[in-house]
Length: 278
Image (cartoon, rainbow, N blue to C red; front, side, top):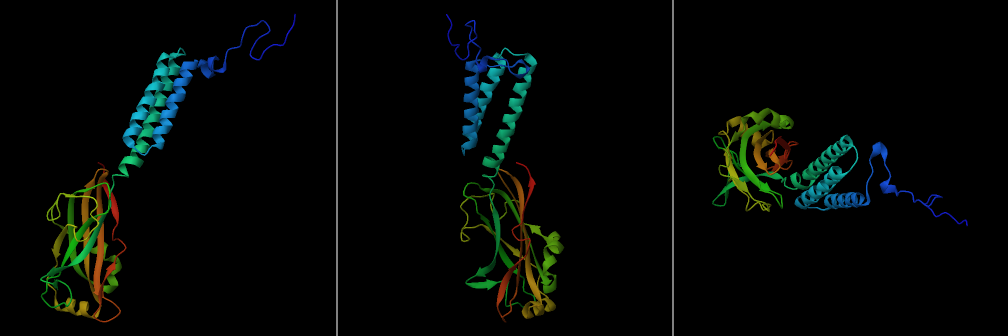
């Protein structure tokens, strides 16, 4: 008596193996339980990458990596294939972990330092700036602001130079006078740690810097607008992501309208350079 042959069944009544039980390329095949472990491991890995928490990501990746490595160990395929697969999985997961470490840890824990120049005020009077006179010692306060909401500035080393510069030489002032910057010393006057949420200038730590006493030609140039008083500054600092330098270039000079002095910002002002790893 004849009948229709069911799908997956040979004419002699013997069922065909399922896809997951068939030998694959190179003789590698997976049993159903191994296949389920692989699916679970990949789900954990994808979930970890999607979560904005590096610690949780690490836990999920380790569990996923462990599951995949376990499959490589218990699998009955050829040993060399299992070893190669385990190594590839390890390298891949290390790459994923490092990438997310860069994105979710280093970048998140990198803050931003800002240098702000302000006049020295004593008993309600501005000192060290206009009106300029012969023999006056220029003086300014350089304040350090931390713009981050999550990370602090550590071991700040703040330095500055106050130089009288011809107005026509302002574009190259930073490069010319950078070597005259004098640092206050690590943490001196500024403190060893500048905590986050330090965006208020009133609460910002600062150091006071002085220039050389003004000469007659410098005073004349500052008064007629042909010269400017430039503050070239540098901050060496660290956070949890590495070591950095932030530079400042701000010049005080007579504006278009007589007797009105303003701060001109140089192109280097605020430039940040990474100079070391954590």
